[in-house]
Image (cartoon, rainbow, N blue to C red; front, side, top):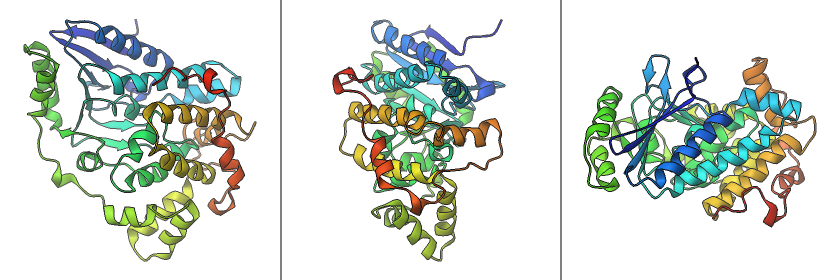
Length: 361
């Protein structure tokens, strides 16, 4: 029999979660979202559980890969067939994301290996975010004609300076040291110690949840050596007023980083770059709940605003279905995006009282 996609058990005083879809790099299915929500809700009210720990798995066993995002192949097929589970997936995923930020017990995320998209959504709300030398962290959604959702507006906009705009627009991948410097991780642990630490966590006796978190944090190592981001350059370019200005300035510069960054932006969906820049900047003044409601509006428009012309479906087609890596973006150039089309993404399709996430506070 196939094993469950999410393994949950209480070991000692710890609620243990293992994402168990390794062939798909633990990409989240609707069933996984529901299983995670149920486990977190149950353990939050269980006095015997002092803290909750979550990890991923790879083909050889635990750790090595955390979560590569949402199940984009499912979303592509379901959206093309008019399957209502597309709506369910995003609504329930965002409710789960909100819950992880508001748990009343320590929630410890072992963010080893790939941590992207939906994987960030279930880990950024953790009270202790652990990364390793193998961590590859990103919000690469503009490459598939989407935007950094799952609360991405909230946590990216709170990165230092304009790093949130840079990460959101480019989808660049960062390692452990940069993740800590960007306030997207708390501590670094060597990957070879994860298995022993996980086992020790489950057999020790702790006075309370705070003691659990303090003990794990005490095992950390310094992250400085792995810090590679040039924050001054990022702030200089990504503080510019709009996407055309950012790209024009990058293309006018002589540096290799500037040229590579401009070329990367030219590969992304022009329309979604404009949407994403506005998303991140708006989110700076929003609560998490307000941001998630905005993102729920945005994702509805990604699939339905222009019937037959979804940037998201085209991006997924090019990356994961036909795999030609040649998306036909519409419009094709950053300079040709109509501001009115961008405005339309930010008009909610629901009255406030009937919004799918109206209950989030």
